[in-house]
Length: 349
Image (cartoon, rainbow, N blue to C red; front, top):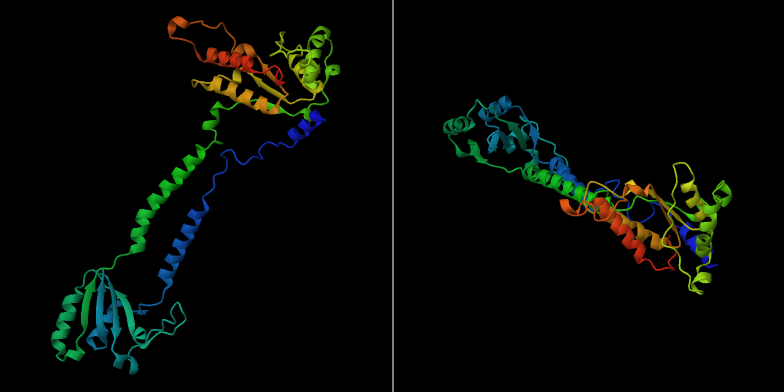
């Protein structure tokens, strides 16, 4: 019953269902999307807000000034002109009043807003001298045009100049932080590449599928019995072997034998190659060995099958004269250390 419950627990574990998504698809944080939406809304309200009056041609504006139809003029940033007609000009019908509609709250436009207009000054015309000469010839103060100038800061444009580079830096920072997360490939270089086969996935592979190799089968039968019922051996003082070395030419059934042992015992099966441990980075091999045995302890009882283990096998202490051990020796030492550190009743072979 305990073995069956353990297998059911293992069957519930599906790859890719953990909270970590592996650093795959990059997603923008919700607060960043919300800030962008708010900024876009403010920008649209600013551009669509009523005001400023109707747009008139610059030449027509000059004629209206000479006809005494303009009350005031304000030059904005040297080129844009905002002004207002006289009340008599609107009432007499000499100029067409603007119809700015209503404001953002739905209130109708006032009479002052209906008299306003806008235009754009040409670069080759001095409007200030033109208005000054007109006021000198107008005589009466009520017929003169009041004019002024102001510099208007485009805060949205200035804000965009700062926000766009900062936003790009934030996005890049979030992207690289995502890549440096525990589930990313950058930090996963020290993780084991072992392929895990759950017990129910290879239950149909047993000793009957292994033709011949009768002597080898007899050697591993006790391993199968220990994995099925370890208490039977521990009560008598028996200990599970740390590992089994399968030696033979390629194609003689070493991998099939290991799968048959796992299938007979009904335990998970970790399979990988010896070349999967060693990389160009120092310490990766030892880190992958530690991660492999850590996962094996969580799935115990189980079997770890390392194919072509001679890829990391060598005489320890070799080449010590050229500056110490190399990466393969570190990996081999870590593998032997993990095997020696196992308790005999953990059920990891």
